[in-house]
Length: 152
Image 1 (cartoon, rainbow, N blue to C red):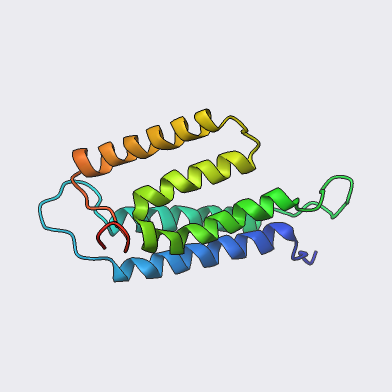
Image 2 (cartoon, rainbow, N blue to C red):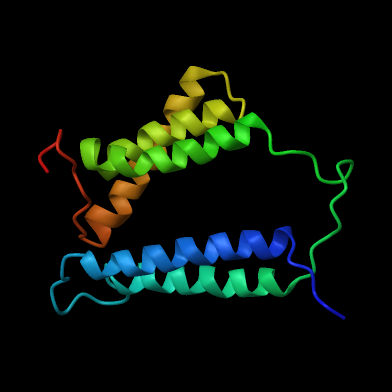
């Protein structure tokens, strides 16, 4: 039986390409001082990339369901908007830094997902950004990218 190249395989190849590109990008990271315990600024992202690649292999091996417009609706505009927000977060990080990008991204994506209460969006965004800052900067003592606006 000849296996058909379906949507699972196409999606798996896309995920594998993203994982490979991200893995390659880790070779441009700044060196981490010796003596930091655990996974460093290079090892942790590489581990995540390897997990993504492994999951892509599993997805590739799964048989795709036959295309049926009733079962598989077309990709909606809001899904494309969220994907665009993910893509725009990368260059935004160079401008306003990681913490600013996280705060903006959470508000934008929360709004795209349908949340209309601005106080809730801002509270969740700022509290998650503060938690990320606390964990990575204060506990793990890592330096996060600050961007051009905030001193990069």
